[in-house]
Length: 190
Image (cartoon, rainbow, N blue to C red):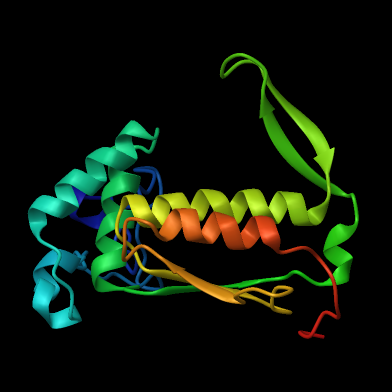
């Protein structure tokens, strides 16, 4: 058996998969040369004006840095900022504030003095969801990623939706609406 009868990779996926040198390649096995599939750079695919925004590469670097300061890994922070500019320029949340959200089977994390001293405590589903909306509102504002939050049943005497990520006072408005809202009404999604 010659060395040309053995291959070190099998293709059909963009990742090389090693084959044991002890296994000869037979004519029954498909042999396809590995062709890398290019992964396009979203920044190069569209200019900032193509998606009707006024974002610049400088703001993207600043926002990536701000996410890194929040504890995000560099690659994740970069991917998140890029996706908000090119792939998902608007995010829409439907926030369930139906009566079932008052049930106390939720969980929230409490900081008891450091990263190794986190504690999980019970709470209502609404408290758990409110914390998630608060967090994502702050992240959306931090990276100027417009996000529309809509309460499923509206709010008593208040707004039933709010947009975060376009103005500097968005987060305060969002938190005010979430603090005034409470679970009640039917689950309209069933």
